[in-house]
Amino acid sequence: MSSLNVNQENFEQEVLKSEIPVLVDFWAEWCGPCKMVAPIMEKIAQEYAGRLVVAKVNTDENRGVAGKFNIKGIPTLMLVKGGEVVERITGAVPKGHLDDVIRKHLQDS
Image (cartoon, rainbow, N blue to C red; front, side):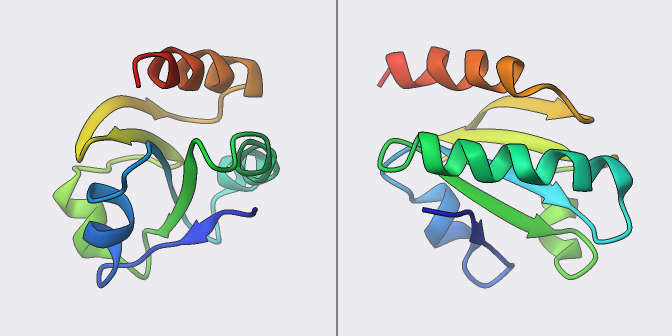
């Protein structure tokens, strides 16, 4: 499974109402660090398929969603569980760090 592109129209349904946790990647085409994170996000989507959804939000095309969640820098990664933001990471981070954060919240499920 690959990541899911999410926009203002389907954000609530795909992210906030998801029955499993969602890791949301707020990104933009021009963002260098976002391009570094992209392959990591695809690996996470594959490795955690069925237990976690990876959603991508292009901030240039979905300013309303970015504004609602006060996204000031990208990439910003938010882990949403039960409709609530439970983790927020700004900047490019290694996959191992994301694995630790994800596993912590999957164990709580």
